[in-house]
Amino acid sequence: MKKLFLLICITFIVIITFYKNYIYPTLRVASGYTAKYVCSSTFLSNITEDNIKNALDLFLVKNVKYEIDKDQKLVKTSLFGIAKREAVYYNNGISCGCLLKYADTIPENESRSI
Picture 1: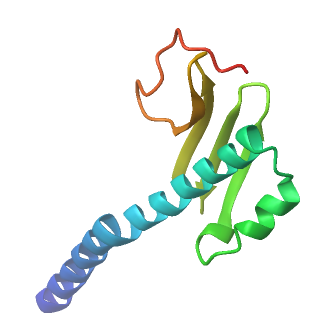
Picture 2: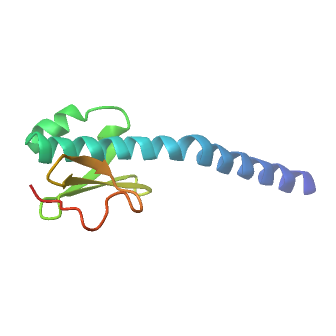
């Protein structure tokens, strides 16, 4: 009984370690790529949503759900509900572009309008 319990614990630890080190970073990259791509395509290039869906027909990327907020100029993505990312369009008068949103990426005084 102790050997079975030990085997289950070791298997659980290996699965958690594998998920944390290999699976989750891959999901975040796919979700971040989609957020940045959709944001750039929507707000910089004015590409239609149908063309964006056709371009995002890649293995993990086609499973990413995204939501475009045109008022906030923000794209929110999620892959299987766990790897959530946001990309925001900014325009400070000198330059403009789309950035993945992290804590303190874009200062509050920067404008997001065109």
